Image 1 (tube, rainbow, N blue to C red):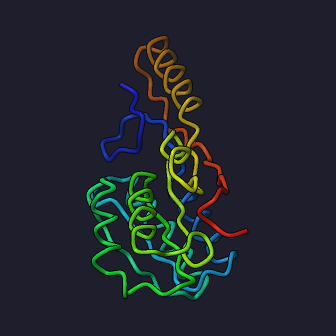
Image 2 (image 1 turned 60 degrees about the vertical axis):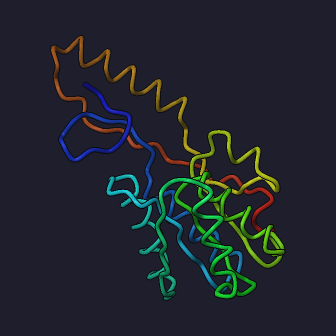
Length: 186
């Protein structure tokens, strides 16, 4: 067995460096000058999510900023509803660092429906970069995972494991990339 994703059970795995990716997006938000940086996470107790949240919180601490975290089921409608119900809570110069592109699309839709200006007043950064980031309008700034390369590495690791009579293969973490698009200012 080789898993596509971090795990607590000691299985060999391939994954994105989720902590590094979230740290990268949070630092990018700081560097762009956004005053309020809010993390929108997935309400799930999985290592990838915990790593993304840790990347955010550690980067905020490093920059002497207070963390603000909200978690939802990974559905865009919950993120959009959150924005609509709490619109008065968000001042211009706020960016939402999201744990998935799906949540980011919901945040984007909520801001647009409430009349907010993206990216002038409100920014959004997603995480995944596997398609949804490109169909959003404006297109999402996102942390892109190397899913094809990770799949190839998973297959190679599994074949090596078979050739080596089940010998442990360890773990491989891929560094994700920040793709800047229309939901963050320049």
